[in-house]
Length: 472
Image (cartoon, rainbow, N blue to C red; front, side, top):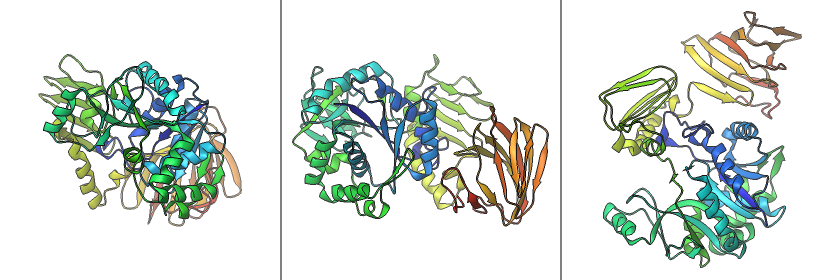
């Protein structure tokens, strides 16, 4: 019986703003190593006994091309299951379970895409230890051996046994500080990791029994699914009829077959900048720095620089995060309060909540360098083999200058190549396209001029990525 990794990649990572944005959240970023958190999650499952050479990633429409590109970068063939709308983890896993059952009743190793696990070997051993129990019909979860009395996690009560899966006595909500201290001292309580191992059919049987509304809506939704290459789209109308609930509330807390494996592997859910600081390498003064950073007389401080030199003097227990369009400065013990800060930015309709200055597209990316009422300057990077949509604009003209690489340009009935230091002009209403059939990325400076410069001023006539007729 194979093990199919199922990676849940639908979160927004609000507490890690400004690095994490709604349209490019933390799981798509390399926050704790050379790989992105999503890539690291998929790769760590590769060592599990009987792991299949395939995985399922549950994501959303907005992130689909970024997810696909990241899987290609680590040479992993993944089915990318696109939730029509977030409905919490119970429906997300149900969609994946119905997809798994199309081929066989495999074991599903369910993992959030945004966790850090430092000791991959210990993680592999723990999962392998739970395989027999999961094959036998148990719903296995992984309880993190606590190293502190955390009040930000739910807990699992069970008798620890490092040699086998043990029955779960109870799931408990996030405790207050005094209760958390008592939990840790007892040795019978473990942090709830949100990771699971079970047979697809067993999970669905429990779901039909404990939360039939979710099971029925997801079954109808997958029956009406459409497939576009590696993208699987459940039927939207059916899925939106599903209640929203977590696996814990919908199934695990009500099941008589829940079992736990104790996991001590340097786990973190990286739920805040303070938590990221905890898992990063530090200097002798407890500082962790990323990017072009110089610190002097600082202690216990995290500094991340994306686009320029950041220098810090005399900071103790402070978070500093610099991106191309925003800077966050926060006390480490107030890191959880970044979330309400982002809500405040939403109330003010700030674009910085959704997107960074560099915006990723299936063909590459663009970076907005400068803008004013009637002009905007962008740097476009088009990947080898990629091509933008054939399109036109009603309100703006564009001037393109190639600064490196080579591009193939379509402008109305003309098709021609531009190399470094060459340029062309696209008038309002011209049908145009940029393609890169060459071996190196092409970098283009684009100057837009016009009465309206919004990204929705696009009429797509043809598109290699299924976006014909859209303007987003």
